[in-house]
Image 1: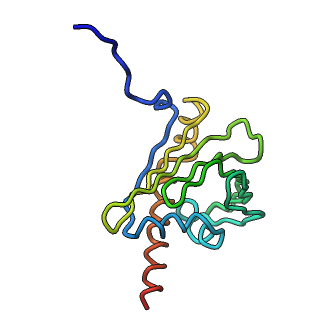
Image 2: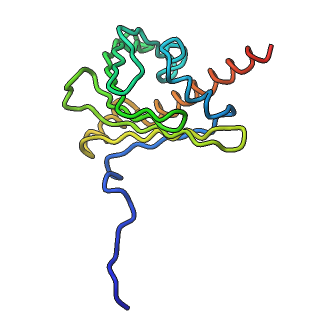
Image 3: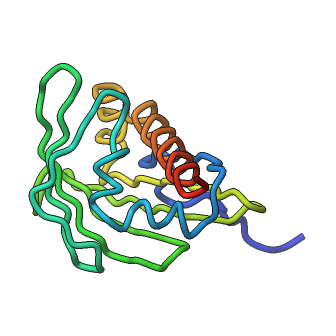
Length: 165
C-alpha cells in the first residue's frame, strides 16, 4: 500500500470556537438580522448584555464600532470590520476591542437552509490557542456564543410573528 496520510482537520482547530443553531426562519431573514444596526441592537450579545453603537456600515471593509454593556454594569468596547459578505450565505469579519487590537480574531458565519429553517454556524478563529482558551475561561465565550445565537433565534421568531399579523 502506498500513499500519504493527510490530516483532514483544519490547521486552526486548536484555536477555534464553533457554535451553531437551527433557527426556524428562512435563510434570507436570518442573514438580514445581521445587516442593519436596528436589528443587531435588539439581539446581539449574550443574555443580559445590551449594545450602544457609535458607527455602523454593513459592507466589505465597513466597520461596526460599539460598546457592549454587561449585566454587571461593565462596558466592553468592541470593533468589527466586515471582510466578506455573500448574501444570504456567509459573513466573515474581524473582531477586536479596537482597530489594530493585537487580539483581534476572525469569525466566519455560514447560513445554510434546512427546509424552511436555517442552520447558522459561527466559527471564531483566534491568533493563538492560549487566547482561545483564555476567552473560553474568562469570558465564557462558548456559552456567550450559544446565548447570542439563541437571542438571534428569538428575535427572528418575533419578527416573523409580527409580520404574520
